[in-house]
Length: 143
View 1 (cartoon, rainbow, N blue to C red):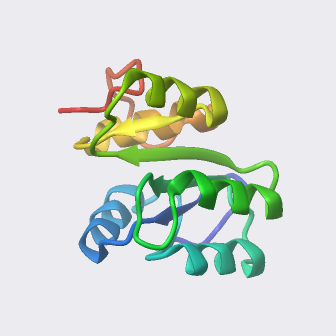
View 2: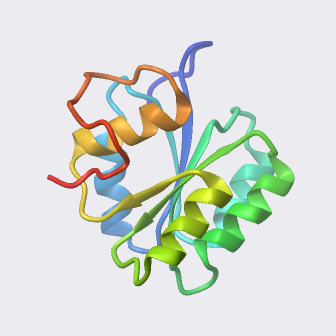
View 3: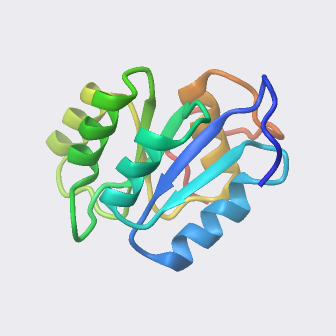
C-alpha cells in the first residue's frame, strides 16, 4: 500500500471472495489510491470505526453471506457520513432495483468490469483524477 499523502484517496473494498479482493487491490494500488480490504461486513465496519485514514469511498459487493451491501453501506455511513458508496453487482435482476440503488447512493458498477472501467467509475464518484483516463463515460464499466 502506498504511503498516504494529503491528495491521496482511500477506498475500503469489501467482498467475501478473497480472490476478488486480491484482484481489486492490484487494480487500485500502484499510485492510484490507498486500499483497505475487508472480507465481511463486521471487518469492514471495524475498519470504518477504527482506521485513522479518511475513507473516501467504499466499494462493496451488493450481496454477501453476512450482510447486504446496502445494509453495510448504511452502517458505515452512520459512522462516516461523508463516505461515497459504489456497489458491485454481477446480477441486477430488475431495472427497478438498479434505479433504487442509484437513487439511494449514486453508484452501481456492473460486473464484470475492466481496470479502466473501475477507475473511471471511481473517478466519477469521487470527482477526481485517479491514474490514466479512459474513454468510459458512464457507470457501465464492461470490457
